[in-house]
Length: 608
Image: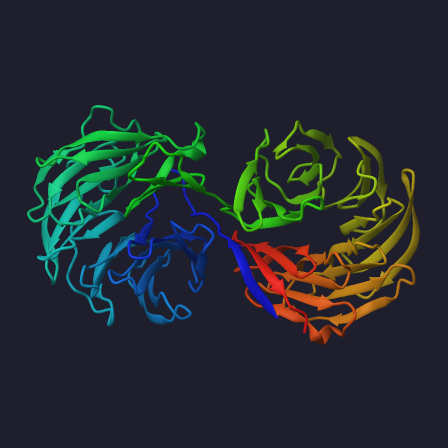
C-alpha cells in the first residue's frame, strides 16, 4: 500500500516576453496555473494543498473555473479545450478542438453556458465562442489578422465579448450570436490582456506600449487611461480587477506591480507600487490575480508572491518550486526532515517536511545540473561541461565552490561516505578518482562506462557498463584492481547503490530490470525485479536495509522488500507525469519521488 502524504508543487511555466494568465475561484480561495502538460490547483490560504490534473496530451496554456466553481475549462497548445469536474476524480465532461493553433486565453460567460477562447489560428479563425455542453458555435469573429492574446466576456447582460492581440487592435463583439461591432487601434504595440470589471461597467486593456486604457463596458468607447505619472517603465503583461471594481492590479517587465484606483471618469492613478524579488531578469512580473483579500503576482522565474490586499506593507507569502524536470533528490543524513532537490536548469532548493519550500541555495554560477550528490556538509555536482563542482554547505547557503576540471564529461558521481574527501566520477572511457580538488588518477577501463559507486570506506568500487556488466574493483591508493565481473543485466546499467550497512548492493538498467546482490558472496539476492515497462532512472535503499525503491521513465515507483519475492511489491502508478527521475527514502517507510512534472511527492509505504 502506498499513500500520498505531501506534494510540493511545481510553479507556473513562464516565457520571456509573454504574460501568463492565472485565474481562481473566489468561493474556495483556489487558483489555477499551468506547467507542462499539467493544470495545478492550489489554495491561497493553504499553500501545501495541491491537486494536479494531468490528462492533456499537449502543453497546457490556460485554465479557468466556471462561475459556479463546479467545472474547469483548460486549454493547450494544440487548440483543444477540456472541460472537467472539480470533484470526484476530475471526471471529463467534454473535449473540443476549438482553434487550429495554440489557445492563449479563455473565459466563461456569467451564466456558465458559453465559453470564448482566443489564440493562434494558423490562418483560420483566431477566436471562437461555443456552447459549453455541445460545442456549437455562437457567433462569427472577424477583424483580427494576428494572434489574439486575450479575450473577455462581459459579466452582466447584455453580453459582450472583447478581444485584443498582436495586431495592436481591441475588437468588440455584440451578441449572442456574436458579431463584430467595432474596433479600436489606440495601442502602439501588442495588447497583452483585456478584462471586464466585475460589475460590467468598464473594461481595461494593457499593452507592451506600457499603457493601460479604459473603455465603457456597454458601448466600448474609449473613456480614459492609467495615469502617465509614476507609470510602468516596461511592457504591461497582465491586469486584474479588485472584487469591488474600484481598483486594478497590473504587472510589468519593469519588475513592479502597481495598484491603481479607477475614478468615476475612467482614469487611473497609482495607489501603491509593489516590488517583490530583487533586480534579476527572473524578477520581471508576468502574471497577476486579485481574489477576495489576496493580491497575487507571478515572476518570470515562476515565484508566486501572495499579498494581503488590506495590508500591502506586510511581507508577502512566497510560493516557490521547480519549473523544469527535477532530476535529483537528496535527504540530509544529519536532519532527515530536510530535502535538497535540483532541476536541470541549475536550481537547487531546500524543502522541510511538513513545511514545504524553505529556501534556494544560491550559487554564483547558474550552470545546468546533470548529476548531484550530497553529504551533510558538501554538495558535488556536474553539468554538461568537463567540470566537477564541490560546494561546501555553510548553514543553509553555499560557500565558495571548488571547481575541478577532469578533462571529460562526468556521467555519474559517488562519495565515499566515511571518507568524504574521496570521490569516484564515471566518464565515457573509465573512472576518475578525486581527493578533495585533486585528481588522483584517471583510469581507462577499456569499456564504455555508464554508472559507478564507491564503497563508504573507499576500498571498493563497482562500475557499470553500457554492455550491462558490473565490474567490481578494489581501490588501492590511486589504482583499481579488477576483482570480478557480474553478468545478469540485459541493458545499459543506469544506477548502482550500496545498502546503508554495506552488506548488499543494488543495480538497475535501461532494460527495466533491477537486481539486489549480496556483497560478500556476489550472488543475486533478489531477482525477477522486472515490473517496470521502461528505463529505470533511479534507485534508493531504506535506512533499515529492508526495502529498495526504483523510479522509472514509465511514471511508476516500485518498492520491493528484500526478504520477500519480487512479486509481493508495492507499485505507485503515475507517481510523476512524464517519468520519475529521482527517488529517495526519508525514513524507513516514506519515499519521496520527483520527475518530469517538476513536482516532489511523499509516499507512505505500508508493506504487505
